[in-house]
Image (tube, rainbow, N blue to C red; front, top):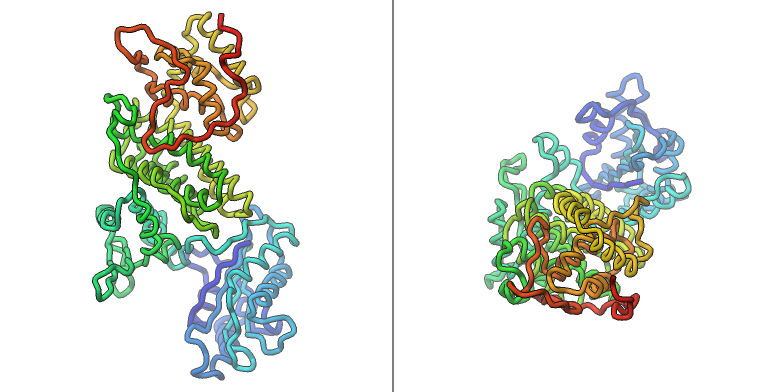
Length: 585
């Protein structure tokens, strides 16, 4: 059950809308289900609706007129209350009880108070009502409406439980402001799929992702095609900023400006400055990062970001302040990936970034934490530009997205453990979008790997299957209960060995890097970890090369590659020592 509260100054105008046909003829059978005394005129049931509507407006405004100049300018309190999709339809009597509990909880008309404000509840659809009240009490004082939205939310949670309705997640005051009804109707009228507020919020988030300083942030906003207005102090220092979409104007022909703080709590200029103050880590050359010189810049940056994201997942199990900061950094990384992703995965990655935005804000402060590695990874991806949806670029997109699925699920666990219901739900939503994007990005490279695994000589295949059974004895099925396919992982182990690594040792290292319990398919996750650790092509159409051309590969225990700015995560206790296993036959 979702309450939505607003204020206005035209009682009669609001009633005309509520009892009218609606903007799309969606209002049907408008009628009262409750009022302050039970005897208010009902235009929906009166033989002369226009006269009844005028009488109802006059009755609601009686105390406002009596108060005169003491009445508030916006004296109309309006609260729509909607049940969740799939909920049963409530009767008029049940909606009346809901309205009475809300006006009591918010202080509009407390039970037993003869001087409570005048109010009505109008129903013109099966799934919601509108509560209208005028904000002058019988003693001509104004009601105390502190935290009325929070109080309405709290009573709706209790009503859901008592009436057997779908229980929604409680808010904590850290969510971004929802678009108003006027903004939604305007978007529909001009044919936009989302409101200006939502478009601008996403554009500002993408502009700040990996930005090096304030100047670059504002430059990115302008390059994205936004109108930008910076507010300056007399000293010349910037105090804040406003953004507007080109062509978005009000009835007076003026641009519709939105301050950053009204887009989201963390998009005000002071909050952005705190994030930019962390800086970004120094960039390194591709050779220093252990990357092959024939990989494209987008592929190199995605590989490096994968290791950084894996380490962020480990830190989510640590100090709360550190974890909260990592969530902010992961949000920047998702925004960077979404705006530079191939066309095939762009929609789902953008949806994942939008969902995870809610998971980056809670009352746990992100203090004393270093997220330079994540911000550097986001910056590198943005500067490298868009990735192609094929070849090595497409393969490294799948590699990074596979890891981001586990990171967002780790975020969901962290939020759930702290009672952050909305943030946990947002993290799980992001994970679902990422899983869809992963399947799209990984389809071709995984198909090639499965073919390569099936084409291996039987003896070599059995050897690597034995290695898998020893390391993962309980991983015979996927998370959805279907049999796990090991062909791609077997092919990768064979290529790991050909590239000069010890398959058993490197497999154990991949297993110990980060938890695998939430993986939809453990084999897929390990394929990408092994290919990154061994510097194998993410797109397996190219055969792996030995580290030294013209020489026979020499096995090493791990042969780790250095990752740019990635602190080494402490491994979990090893399941067993690879050196203690029987030699392969």
